[in-house]
Length: 294
Length: 343
Image 1 (cartoon, rainbow over the protein chains, first blue to last red):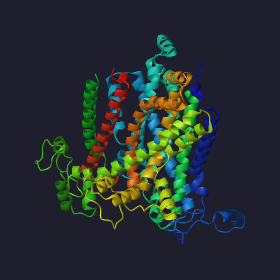
Image 2: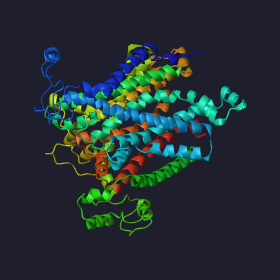
Image 3: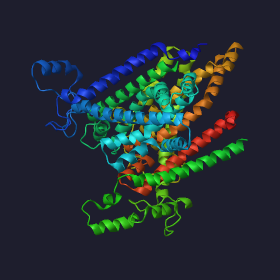
């Protein structure tokens, strides 16, 4: 019987969320890919003008025409920060920093977690039991503080942030995949393959793995969003990438000192960028979850 | 029955904490960091370096350091973990346990108030969204829950500071827990609002609340997302359950039915509150540093950036112990509401 709650929040709302989420995610990935080549100013080089507010919104169309067709120098669309860096260029280029770290951490934790999850679900012995306890232990650490410890002590580099996030997120994929494999291994087609004499490794690789991927894939979008939050949060407290790397959390932290003086632009624009991006990934994740729940 | 469940559950929590204590000790020392260089600087002479290393106790073998951490060895001046001590901070020279005890109430006050606000707003809004599936309220609460739940504390903290302090001028600046000109009340509990009340100073109580306004708003906003999402989903499921269907069929007024459904939605929601509590401790780190509240989160940032190993261990252990205690209380409460859990 089709239960009415399955339809709740589905249908039109899920479709709209999917389009919004996919649109934002697509835009951010595109910016991460081409950002450094389309921005008007070098994100690392300070300009002469310091703490200049962005031009009023009404002047934007005129300025855009001037820049594109009349060869005028590009305005500082989002203003400049206290050291004269162009906020617009840095906000765009920062998409690459945050997305590369988050996507790489997600890919690594996905690969490790799913592989170990298939093994732990398929072979249930002392070693896989120990693996599950290790994953329990990792998950009982407070996430943000542990990430700070790992990155600050291992060295504040992109690679170390990716590794720290991988360590924190792999147990999620491990658990999801293992649970899926545990239900799959009792299913008829697996039993049939076993009865037909297909070797264990081949069953695991060709029959279990493709079918056990779904929960992990659905989780991916949510994990990338959280990874971006964590990356920006780490930089915000001084335990992430080093200045002057263009990175959203770092830019917000740098501009935070000026906000009480009324200079809102150096931190607000990167703030909007993080907000929008993580909402995009969350909306996409939610829509995918709904789509695959039925 | 419930007694045995509680004892077993406490036993498990103690084992978890013990494993965590061992893990955090070795994890920190596995990482390629050089705390000695951090303390003496890069230009230190080899003699100064060696002296600092001996001073921190890092010249001893790892097993000896671990024994001292546990309180099994050492000179007895510093109580170890088994005596309830967390060692001595390398930066301040003060016992970590005392420092944590001074900073923790600030964080608990912040999180407690944020939870209170988020629940007071989130439960009615989430239940309201669940009343008419597919309606505008349902869609609105879904999108709001999803949005707020994904948002970074640092962006919204800055937006709120700009709007309410710089723009409207109705909130104090992000400069701490009281105006710098105000004489704080005697620290009894460490939570400013409670101390002000204990000192019989309602004016200070209001001032402390005023200073907590934006930090609490920031945390409560982020927290309201998952709470609304959870209440909406659980109430929606409860509204479709058979006993609510029966109550409706029996012609009970909508208010009574809604109350029943909320109660049924409560038990499954409790597990998530435990998860959210741990999640909030992370959020508190960002909010405290943004508003200079001087809580455990800021202490954690300072200790981690200074490579102060005893303080780092202490913070991780205390936070984990609190999380485990919250899970424990929720599990026991859940078992009391739903006796099937103990089976």
